[in-house]
Structure formats: C-alpha cells, structure tokens
Length: 525
Ligand code: DON
Image (tube, rainbow, N blue to C red; front, side):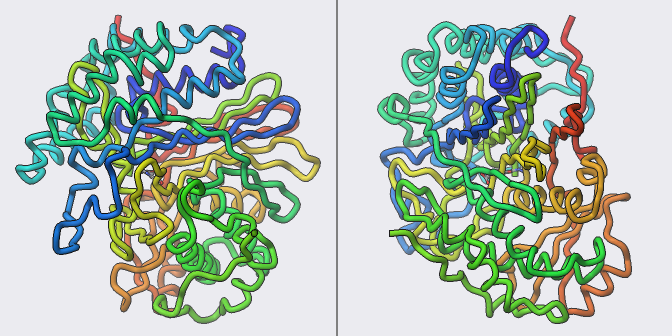
C-alpha cells in the first residue's frame, strides 16, 4: 500500500482487513480495537472502535438467579459477543485520513480470502489447539460453536474463505453499510437467533466509533502518548512510568528491579479495578491518575527492600476533575504513523463463526466485570466502573503507543497483545530503551515479567515469568524474589510487541521473535 502511494492510514486499514483473513486468531472484522494516529503536522488522534454491549445487556447478564457467575457464558456463548466495531472504525480512520479509494483497502484481503493462502506451521498449530479446545467445551457451548466447520486446515494446505470474501466484497462496495446493514447484518442477527445471542439490527446500525483525546505523559526526557479509556492501557502505562521515576534505576532484571515493578503494578491494577471503565458511562479520573503528584504519593509508600502484602493494597484517591489480540505499527515517508491494536479477545474470539458471512465473533463481553470482585479470563477484577450496561464499552488493556525523543521527534511506535500484560510489556520495552540503553530490537526480544493485583490466592504473591529458553530471568533474580516472599509463576511467553523505531531519519521495523509477526505468507497459486 505504501509502495503504491498510500499513506500510513491506508496501509493500516489494508493490513487490518488482510489480518481478518490470514490471522483469524485475532485479526478481525467481528471484533474491535484502538488506533492511534500521528499526523505529519505533529498532531495525534485516538480512534476508539471498541465493541459495545448490545442494548439487551444488563448488569447481571452473566450471573445465575443465585448471583453466581455462570462459567463460560461471557466467553463461549453467543452472549459473549459485543457489537463489532472494526469495520466502522476502519471506515472512520480512512474517511478522515485515507488517501486512496476505499475499495483498494479491501482488495488484497478479498484476494487472500478468495484464492486462499498457505497455512504455515505456527498457524497450523494454533488452529489445531483451538479446534481441540472448542470441541472440548461443555455440551451447551459445543452445540453453538462452529469453529471447526470453518477451520479444518493443516500445515501446507490452502485456506480459502469464500463466505468471508463475499462479506468483504459487500464492505468494499457499500462501506460500513455492507457490514452494519443489509445481508451481513441479517446474517449476524440470524446467528444470534440460532445461539440465543443479543445483537440486533438496531445495535448494528447504531454502532459508532469515537475520536478521543489521547493520554499523554513524560518519562525522563521522553514524551509518551497512548490510548485513553475505554482502554486502561494508556493510563496504566503512564502511571507506571510516573511511579518508576521516583526511584534510582535498578540493575536490569535484578530481584530489586522486578520487585519494584511488581509493587508499581499492584497499585496500578488496584486503580484499574476500582476507577476505570467506559468514560461515557463512568467518570474515570484520567487527569488525576496520570498526574505526577499522584504517582509521587503512590510511590512514596513502596519499600525497595520489602514486598507489601497484596491484601494491604487498594485503589488510590486520584484528584477528580469537576488472550487474543494483535498489534501493528506503520510509519510512512511523511512521518504519518499508526499504532493499532485490535482483538477478538480470546484466541479466535468466541469460536463462533457467523454462518454465511464467514467471520469470527469476538468474546469481548468477558472484559466487563461479570460481578464485582470476580476475575475474568485474565484474572482481572472490577466493579461499578466496569459493570455490564447496555451500549457500554468494556474496559480494555490495549496500549497502542507513540514515544517521542527529547527533541520532539517520533522515536517509537509500539503495542502488543496479551490482555493485562499488554501495558506491562509496552512499559518494559520503553524502559529497556530509555533506562537501559538497549536498541529497540534488544528491548523487544528481552525476557519479560508481569505482576498483577489481586493475586488469585492472597497467601501467594506471584510474579509471572517467561519459561521459554532464552526468555528466563536469571536464577539469582528468581532466588532473590523467592527470598522476598514472591511466588514464581512460569508462563511460556508474555506479549508480542510489534514496533517501528525511528533513528536519525531511518525507520526500522521490529517484530517480536516470540510469535509469527515477521512471517511471510505464501499466497496460493
Ligand atoms: O481489550 C483487552 O484488554 C483484551 N480483550 C485483550 C485480549 C488480548 O490481548 C488477548 N491476547 N493475548
């Protein structure tokens, strides 16, 4: 797209549609996301195309009559799907800033869907795992889950998606009406009827993407700009960076550095649980949370030598004014840049394909708090601020971000998947560059860790570390953390950062070695 004279927004929109075809794991038209746009004149805009709760949704949607949260309902049933935002969002970004005709945005995706593409090893394995997990669901969910009907391909085979190609053709010809009205909308509503879901024609026709003012902070001599609510990501990232500034730089990946970051993360997650949600429904104290004085107060009680008891942690009192996702970063020759994170939530979303339309529906409703204090699939909790309400956007952690150098030049465009590990991953990449002098490539490839609050079991205070060879923390760091009273919880990997770094006028694409971001697709002959 860039070679053909398109700008960064054109390229981002085309990439997004192409990912909807060849990365069904998270690329989507049945989900939503956030796009941060840097314009050549230096201004920055944030576009929110997050899914919304259907009009028929309400606070107790995922609770049984006795008040218990029904396991799996917000993840695997038709109720799991929020009203998709992607197509309206991409249209809106393109309408405001695109330079090439709309239909060109969809042409590569249509071709990939129609002619198919060859399934690589990474995708084959991921599809196999998804098929197993969706067919292993309890009977009630298995019945309505049609994932395997659409995705029964193995490595080296060609995946063709004719229904999806037709849906994309309608979007190419009619714009958002090709998705939110007419045949595609009817197919979505029929799918809802089959599985007892809530999305109606009115929900679809009424969906709007929103332009929002980005959040902004400073870290050392850098300017950091990121996504505002309904993502918690930008606020959390800036709050973490603000708190970190109150401490001397610790030795990289020493027990004391990991401990310090974990203490910061506990406080940020407590704030997230109590104070963040859709700003159209709940007054999120954005300015208070990213305020440097607030961070100083929060940081003042952190002890570098001793870990706190997670039970002693709660949300602060900021000043009040009156599992699967994908990220891509684009920079064009005029320094127009896009940082975009988009998701179906879990890997392959709900696993429910809209029959006849050929795309996967998200299970983003699980990002709401089904009941105060009850953790969602990522172990995060919430309450009033993030309860289910008709038309509301569920709280996200997605963190599309720009970092500017001390002379105001765009220096990094970055973001990641990983649920609540998104903003902690983005945070680590930034401090690896700024505080530890790494190149962006080293900073992205380096091992990561994560701590979140509240812990599943209050007796334990687990720090999540990567277990893959080459991604482990040093044994002395792990021993030091255990001595301080932390439990170590191993996970295979954390995050998948896709970034562009700009240095001395040259842009360098950096794809996380953890997953398949740099993989080349073989188009079918
Ligand atoms: O919006 C959010 O924060 C989540 N729905 C993102 C899910 C995700 O990153 C899953 N990927 N690993």
